[in-house]
Image (cartoon, rainbow, N blue to C red; front, top):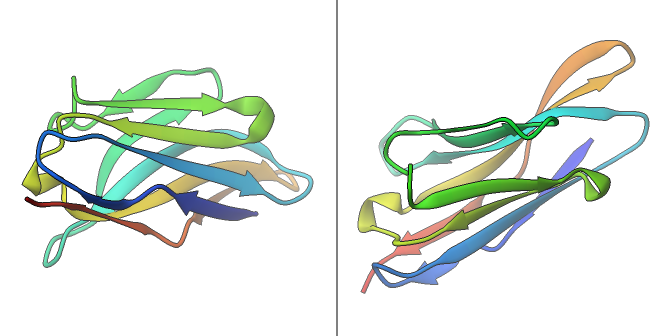
Length: 118
């Protein structure tokens, strides 16, 4: 399974960005997908995640500002980020937990940089 993330970039504080991540491959089913982020000098942290049955979970720091959604037919997850703050600056990584060959496997995308700065 390969994860292809896109949508990062430079945005001013208060602005918005939308990240996308598409999973591709063969003979797999998605259990859940999500986004993590890692700021310079900090550990990778969960931002938001969503299950195949559309149950979502958010980090407290992004609740009310970020929205995660998915298109199961396209194996794609989105992260709508609004009211961005400088502390949201980080590399955002897409994550997917899939079931393949009877096993649960965790995959990561390549990361996309989000920079919030004036």
